Image (cartoon, rainbow, N blue to C red):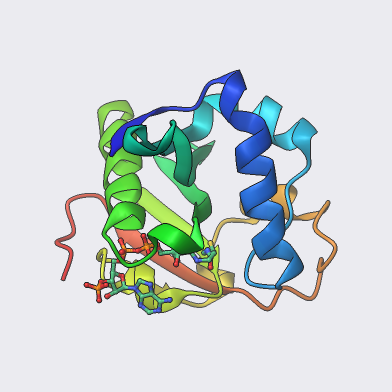
Length: 158
Ligand SMILES: CC(C)(COP(=O)(O)OP(=O)(O)OC[C@H]1O[C@@H](n2cnc3c(N)ncnc32)[C@H](O)[C@@H]1OP(=O)(O)O)[C@@H](O)C(=O)NCCC(=O)NCCS
């Protein structure tokens, strides 16, 4: 499996994967506009033995000084539970650590996955208000039913 930053040629496959999961209600939909605007946030896992197929994607979005959101986590159903999602999150956080990020948070319906990576469940009220600027375009706003988790830099994974 090859892990690298996303490039334009990945966008259609990312769009399809993320929005297929969104239709199933397990993650939020993302427009092509958002994916292009945040392309530099994203790391992809590419199966080079299978024609360069997209196996997974994840993004790290800077919110404020030392605070970033892990978002757009999606691993193709053919590739789940092989450690790909975990590896993407670790790579995103390594990039964030270089910038000096001290707190990583996520809003998800899959808290178990993030707990294995050292995130702990928090109340949404613990997140700074700036976070919600990202949420106003969400169809679910203001009735967010995702679970918030936080991980301090340097926290050990399970
Ligand atoms: C959640 C998701 C990204 C995990 O990716 P993955 O590549 O399957 O995850 P990994 O193989 O790295 O899993 C690492 C560990 O996390 C835990 N884990 C993974 N998926 C889990 C789940 N659905 N529920 C609980 N724990 C989970 C397991 O402990 C796993 O280790 P194990 O397989 O040895 O038991 C993937 O299942 C997915 O894309 N799901 C659909 C979209 C989605 O829900 N995205 C998250 C919304 S932000």
